[in-house]
Image (cartoon, rainbow, N blue to C red; front, side, top):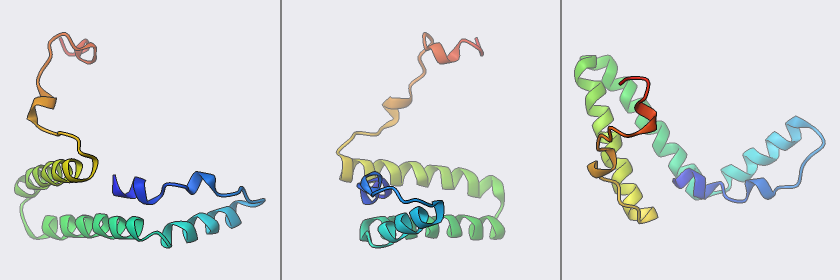
Amino acid sequence: MLMKRGSQGINDLPKKSTFFVGLLQEVIFLVTRPLYVLSFLGNMFGSVLFYYTLSQADVSLVAPTANALTFIVTSVAGRAIEKEHVGLGMFQYDSNSPFLHDIR
């Protein structure tokens, strides 16, 4: 969410003649956006924390905990930033779902 907001306008950059010049222009654009940089660093910190915890604890404990924390953080951030309601009601089982036809 935050990275998407922080990168708004990147598609409006003028197209450059070479791939590397365009890539450099996009990197400079993103690095100069504080919202993008902060959300990127937060994402990287979460990944490092996950791998560190995974190396220190049992995977059967770390993976479910990380998944639950991801859901909670995403829900809180979505509610605070995008004003969208994320809850368990969004994930109720629907037997008429077209996505379940292979497993019925």
